[in-house]
Length: 232
Image 1 (tube, helix red, strand yellow):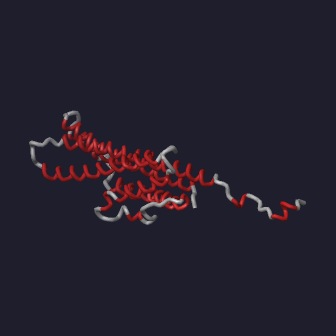
Image 2 (spheres, rainbow, N blue to C red; image 1 turned 90 degrees about the vertical axis):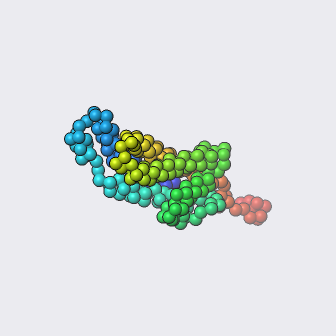
């Protein structure tokens, strides 16, 4: 059964989780990259750079926050998918894919986006409504493009880092700048995720209002032929 309040509460919790993850990622990635840049530009000394590094949280902290924030997001996605049953939609993916799409190796690079896009497509009634199906799908694919490019970019940088270690012809500053660009992309994908969730919730609320507003025969009294011919 459609429950807009529950969906909105899950959205708020998930949005806070996404914001916390982005903040921790900024703290964990921007600080060391900025410290390295300042050191290479002779702005800070070696001791000052080491002091800055000491303020960086352990890598496990952002990773743990990512896992914790993923729980309300998956709960939100699962509820948004179950709501489609009330809208007489014909989604291609069952509710189980809201979780399963994220844990299948290799396929998880594209399946989650397809599942979310499926939910978005059936959350809006038509192109005349706002947000429309086109608006929702644009948000979904913009979010996934940013998230995917960040993930691939991090892997590429890790490979390059292992290959150029000790190579004086490749300045480390290039990788530091690349990390900062990817981090900006990661934060942008987090913002897009929140906008996408909010828009899907709005579309479902609009569609539910349209469904609820339709007349229900049970709300009208039933008249027999005798009552019509022989009114009291």
